[in-house]
Image (cartoon, rainbow over all chains, first blue to last red; front, top):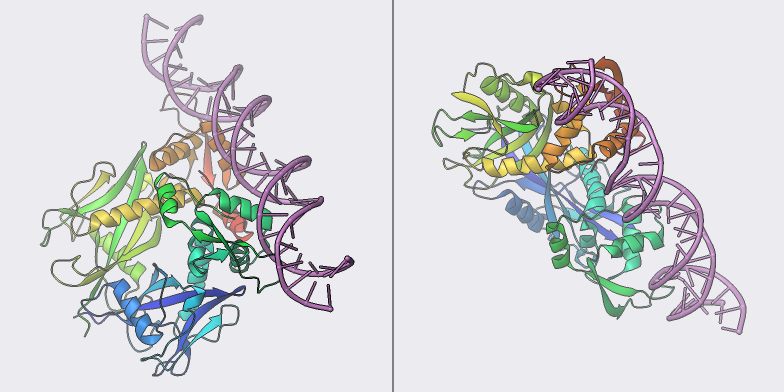
Length: 225
Length: 225
DNA sequence: TACCTTTGCGTAATAAAAACGCAAATCATG
DNA sequence: CATGATTTGCGTTTTTATTACGCAAAGGTA
């Protein structure tokens, strides 16, 4: 039979307080024992790829994923020192409330790392991270996937700060708001953000996925820069 | 060992006379014997994925590929009736002069099909085709990859017709020209298209890849709609 | 009450896109 | 060899989108 092994890896992003995080697990066994790595593992024979990623994530991190898409397949010979392993990488997003990491079964430790302060990573996972970050940044500009990183109800300022930190640039608050709201995919609620923060409490918004899909069907395209 | 087999498939596009073509091979053996399918096959144990696609393409079609990128990995259980096969699909572009198909070794027949008149395809290749077409159309708008489908020297009208046929919409010739040339990635040559066609012969242009990469590095982004 | 911060709504200046006009170069045709 | 058909090449005007700001309102804090 084929001696090529098939695996999946997951790059899971989380966002909170103007910081972008990624979930990593500390490896229990060689190779790279004790190093941080992306959660992932081998695909079972009768298992779909997406099912495999979700299973690994559940087993290793207990994370409840909110958005998941295939990223890229990394298949260079030699990327695993043991033998030929081809890995289909997925990238996922979680909401702030799902940040808490549950008991891990397979991996020794799980933790969220600020993407700006990553430890050395096992295998070619640094390369995978870079690809994932590129995809996240690019996609943010032409699909409203950033909303998967916020609570279901959020003040508008949160969304603006999310774009600003992930795209790593200043954004004019007023123009950003006008442009985003003009798409009509956010519902303005009759609730206000609790005034724990300083400043005037803002109205809460929620993503109207139905309206977004309808607009997309019509060919109207989302774009934020 | 793993009973999952790893394969690659190639979706190769060609363009000529306002028509978009794709290369297909007729299957020699079951399953789907006698049906048209995408060129492809199993990855060898010590072979990189891109090497595998290129080898298969050479063996099955003799096509000289000009541009190649990974498209998506199709891994649903049951997509191959025999056993579990996960396929990493690539999509490629060839120039008109490379259209001629050479002797095939592995496959019975190779042919170019107009994407608008495709025969029934084996496996889940119809789905792969759809994904590839989507990617080509999307990418055309934010990267000048369409130039890989034209001769190295081409009259501007060819480029406009290429966009018009692949994106399947009318384009204002004058605005398109202005916008495309403004990027400064095309060199205007001192040659003219041979006046075999009717109408005024146009100047020939060529793609200045160096200039394009320089601009991309600066963060200036290409966009055509 | 004064001050700081953030929200929410607006307007003016600037840049980009879309719509359209028209002459020049070539070929086919009578 | 003049006429029409076709395609190129270079404009202008109108419309739309983006960018750059101004400023009052609503909350907390001192």
